[in-house]
Amino acid sequence: MSKFYVLEKNTSEGLDIKLPLGLFSGVALECEELGEEPFTFNTLEEAEEVKNALYLIFAKKISSTEFIIVKEIE
Image (cartoon, rainbow, N blue to C red; front, top):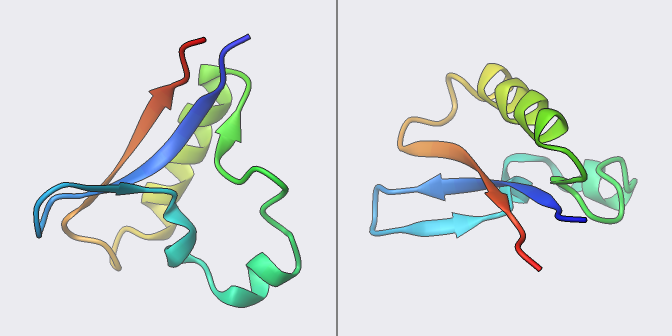
């Protein structure tokens, strides 16, 4: 079964693709509120929902950042 990842793609200084963990405070990460494998999903639908939510949450904070979904191929 493939996994889907929601990643942050920043194009302001070249191409930088990473998990969007830096957008959250350390408190959320310490409390493990994001789970063991943050931004990792079993279905495309789940990944799309989170991607859309990230745009809503960080609409004013991010300008050169996109959120993309990457499918793991086995």
